[in-house]
Image (cartoon, rainbow, N blue to C red; front, side):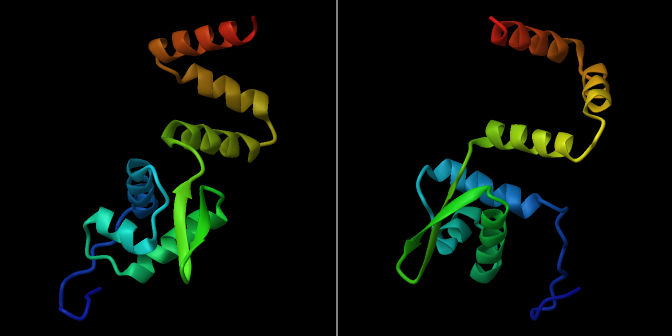
Length: 126
């Protein structure tokens, strides 16, 4: 696919733009408008494309928004580790056999991650 300049439109992997937008929001530490997010991305994306990504993130509950003029300014609901944990819970909730999913997850952990998980679980039970 080409754009109006004849340049090839290189499709990004699914989620890459959302991840880039989230990185800009986390770095900012304050609500940003789509235009400011676009500036932070430093890419040739249209402001409307960035606005669409932010709207989708809002619909997913990943960002909140507040009125700013005629539009919105967006802010992340969680930090990056919190968002990853949320995604892990979402995936776990999709399967009816939680015990098997958790067992397989733990079985595939590296020894270091398994030790860390054991420590977290032991500390949480005290």
